[in-house]
Image 1 (cartoon, rainbow over the protein chains, first blue to last red):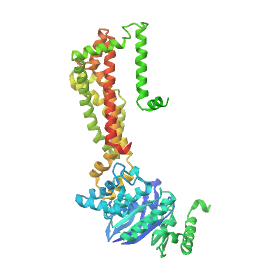
Image 2 (cartoon, helix red, strand yellow):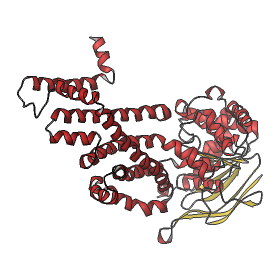
Image 3 (tube, rainbow over the protein chains, first blue to last red):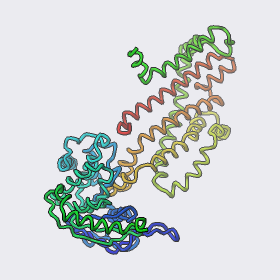
Image 4 (cartoon, chains in turn yellow, cyan):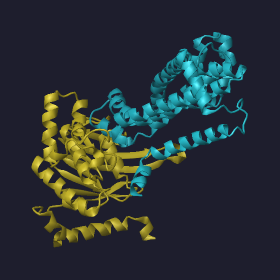
Length: 256
Length: 255
């Protein structure tokens, strides 16, 4: 799988009210990669994800998967939102099964895959619980299981841990990292949290705001055998500080 | 008195106490003889009037006639409001086309349509049923439209990224999400339907609870008027409780 975002620009509104959100954004995601886009609010990072998901159309440029242009949403690109990620009237298992039912898979297969993916995210015991009976972290794991169960070629994560408290965030980062290593999924993560991006992604793109554009791309080649160690290791902290400075320099309010 | 406190905390106890208090006040007032019986009949007299009408089968016949009108008129209104409301909630074009029109008609008092309905359809069942339809359809539709507009965007978009198309999304995402609000909308507007059927019967009918009240007025039978009012209130309350029970069972996730 090769996802190619080429010179993508996006504006909302017409005439004098036009607001340029993205300017000539280009990057690629290949099978098995974990790529992150980091930017502050107003950098249009969510818009990038929505464009790839097919929920919006680019004003210019092209988005292609294996050479084929993408224009509408499809189950080849699974999405996990920050909030309202689960259907509140469905149990955890029914939520996981939801996408497969839309795809019209056979019942036995749905049941088997639902059990399997709940197991993968460590929530086999919570199968029959409603979302409101699950913690925020558990809800996001169910949402990830639901997206994976639909067999996407790439998983699009829109600040999936943005609404969780810090301790749960860290354990969810561990979870996502292990999931990526075990299942070999392809992921594109949007976050405003630089540390999160550097911990998880092999490639990190920094987005500047107003209009959103990629100003820096780094390959993160660090030892990820233990995220807890990585978080406090010297090379990691140096890289984080360097990129944090880059991000700070992009904030117009702070420069003035 | 911990047991009394526990009793008072039961959700129904205070409500029942309130009703009993009014009944008691009513009984004391009439028993003291300070008010003319013609204006305020005693609770016993009202009860006897009820027993008389029940014994003659009149009460059941009237109640069934009114209930039938309400149910036919409201079923038409609810059944049509659901697709129209969902369409308006999902399509901005259709919403812009219909919302001002409906907003306008909604503020025309439904009883003001009675003269027209009588001219068009005479004095049969149809004008009464239509009155209930006119009086509730626009409220039902606009309230369902609002419920649809409040479906979180993420829920719909998640379904789209899972491969969902328009119709499955309407059936499997929008419909279950708005179900509690739709039931609540029906419950609220059912009260108007119940009001309107009585109004229609006061104007022109041969049977029905409203008709019985207007006949009682002609013969100064205030006991029968009171009886009619109480029966109307009780049936309305039962319908309300029915909707609440349905909502608790069908939409447990929303409680």
